[in-house]
Length: 256
Image (cartoon, rainbow, N blue to C red; front, side, top):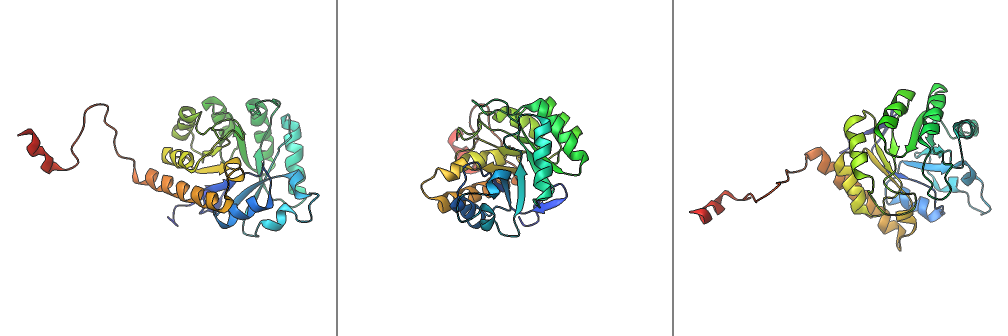
């Protein structure tokens, strides 16, 4: 599996688990890196300066790639401003676009996300847009210069799993970019299912942050994602629409 690399914007990763930092705690960062093997962590710009004695950046090893997000942006202009500011303070060229005007359901504004993606890609950013799974929008994002597409599985923080499963599968089948399932994954089994579908990676946060044992849950996600990826690469067995098929040819004597 070491040769099976996740490539985003020319950068290679061996881990396919990405930690979101919405529910922020230093223990969460530590568990994700040490127990889930995260090599990428999203980071809202406001998280880099806290009232605590310890800073979130203190828990992110040098080898981990920071992906600043544009959390709080209500339109493309605000998202572009946040992204440029994050690069100015040394967070690098990666950026996760999050644009939400809806404060109740926190659904992404797909149209503004396309605009922000195009503007930031022209500025040399490695753009990873968060979006509601829609094939036409995904095509627009690819044409705008996105390095990966990040469709939501279900509403942020809900832990409801793959509510948009069929639409995510369409993106996986039709878009020639890494499809990273983001938001709503609540269980390792759901992460495994998404990987079996052909997702390139999983982003999760609440499922870990609200568990009773952070390190153990982080480890469970790592194992589930790796198992799902292996199953996808191996090719899942066929499913019969009706009847049964003997797994052992010797059982044929039952029909004699």
